[in-house]
Image (cartoon, rainbow, N blue to C red; front, side, top):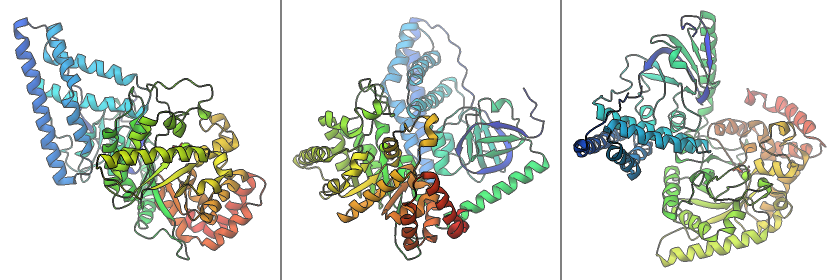
Length: 587
Ligand code: PEP
Ligand code: MG
């Protein structure tokens, strides 16, 4: 092990939440409770079970008190984490498994609970989807709380630190992050964790710089060491020397200045020099991301991917479960609109346990709307759930991977049935709910004029449109040099889509990654897109460019860009235009 007293020790982890902080390390002992397995007499079994139930009840009570405290001090926005933990405590399987181990194995409650935990861990470890796998961490945190109650350890408030510190921990729970007082804790770094863990998601939305997945950082840092967390690069530096310290200080100041400048744009209209508006919205998969979209000035959610609810489970979530999830996003984003996309599963998005058949060409297979149309009852339950959410705010509904008019007509028939079913149950929904389609298959581009007569808006999914138009697997790193958003075929396609939409009087939106790339903004503006949807952090950057652009000039730029025969030539033309007209905005 390298001594932490050496200078400039740098460790690379996962950039969980952006920002640079320099401070004193404080090692947080969130170590696991150690449990000794002890055999008990049959006569002791009932008392042991009572002890376990009491510890469960105490943990529930603690979480409720915590929930109350947090809602008073920080509002109710993030309380879903505690609710999720309360649900785990109420889970029958946890209680049944533990009681079963006590009765069958005649072991103490702590050991029985640890064994139940191992079963849960094995279950979560086998999950392919990263996000869901990391939910296993939530179960561990909750069980740890019950264990502490069983062995009589107190839950010390984690961050009763003096002064401003950087927390270094083996792992932090989402509840730990929620309790962070930003006046005292300026950032954190952990051995464990991934980008999509709740801990990382919360750090991002609470804007606490963090690096996770550093593997053995708790063994390297000592209490009081000066450390630098770079949540942009995903590094942690111990004991910086004077020069490194000065460099980071400058980097930090530059980063913060740029962020401050960008955030000044938050409430300014997303419009061109002539006052032409382009709606800038956010893409989300979880309700936790909504505050970040709002915080960056997003005027709605342009793409709510609903896949997460469906991944890695053996049954489809029912209408009620879906409704709860969709309603949460709609309510959190109100009064702004939310475009909810129906299930886009299959292809590179696996649903291991939904009994989908193995396919030779999954990207060209039974995915997205094709799968939904094959399973009309399940599809209608999703439609009903979305319709019900439409009674709670502004909702738009749209469909992935539409290749032709027949599909959209079939969708409309099922949508009409779903509406009728709700009417017969007297359940309210928005009768005038707008519907749209993703444009991400070349056939949809070619017949965009025909499709435009059927729907209220288009949303171009460039991630797939580029993949299918150029026959480039979007997940194959060996082909990434051929994945060219500025390819003349793509530019022509985008023009056809926007022109067809506008000729029919409907909105042309884009929600693929291309929309969030600031340097493409002049092209997308010139093509005439009405709405661009992207990750929260990209919104101010794109808005900054938009506000310096003239729509008229952007149209002229597009007219020129469309004349070049290769992506490289389009790009060098775009770069020279940017250098000439927008250099100030791209710094
Ligand atoms: C797209 O294809 O551009 C898109 C936004 O959808 P997804 O990335 O979910 O396939
Ligand atoms: Mg797509």
